[in-house]
Every structure is written in structure tokens, then in C-alpha cells.
Image (cartoon, rainbow, N blue to C red; front, side, top):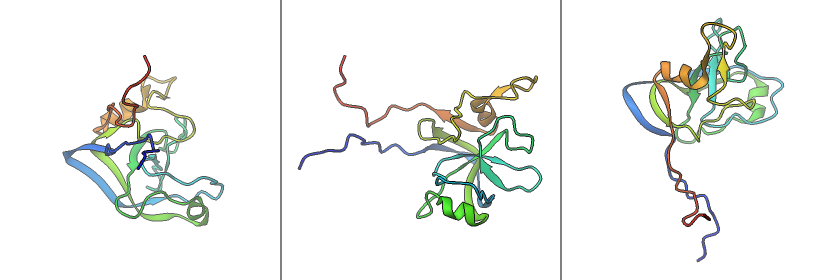
Length: 156
């Protein structure tokens, strides 16, 4: 048998849960009638202040509360990615989102709209901070890990 797959990554996304780890299991993701791509597991989420519904973090300048990353969509078991068609059809209910107290693998976090952990939120205000800083304030701590999928003998 010959191994043809180079991705041997067996690292978990959640590296450690703090004793105070908090997960919402019945969150609601807002309908997105124009969505064309699936919502991937481990996507960074923002929360709409007026409704309490969740959307992917995509705009660090939003004024509805979603400019601050507030949780990570982290399904367990069979749930997984949410199809674009489901988000187009209506709100998606009973969604698990981690909101506090976990160390996670920063390479596995999904941030939409070309945003990164270094994206600056509130850049022109005295509250300016990076996405990583905002997450750390909620004890959601990004950690760098060594990938088991790297080639055993990399070229020097």
C-alpha cells in the first residue's frame, strides 16, 4: 500500500477547554439570501446586538455588533458545514458556538472575506484592536501548533 495523501493532520481544533468554557448549543445563524458558499466548521462569528442572531465575521467596521468576533461555529458529531442552500432558505437554528474559554489551533480557524487574526477592528478609534486581541478578551486564545502534515524531510 502506498500513501498518496500528504495531509496527515490529526490535530484537534480545540486544544484545551478552560474550566469556564462556554458553548451555546441553540444559537441561531441569520438567513443570508445571497449566500453562495457553505458556512464551514470553525468559522469565526459575530453576533447582531439587536437580535442575538449570529453571522460570519466579515466586516470589522459594522455598526450592528458584528464588528467584534464573538464566537466560533464549532459543530460536534454529524453537524459539520452548513450548506449555502440552508442559509438562503432561512435562519439556521440549534447551532453550537463556542463563546468563551478555549485554546484553539489558529491555522484551523476560518475567517471569511479575507480577514485574519491581525485584522484591526475600530482602526480609527481609541478602542482599536486586532481580531486576535478581541478573541483573547473572551478567553478564546489562538495557538500556533506544529503541523503533522508537513513533509518529513523538507528541502533545505
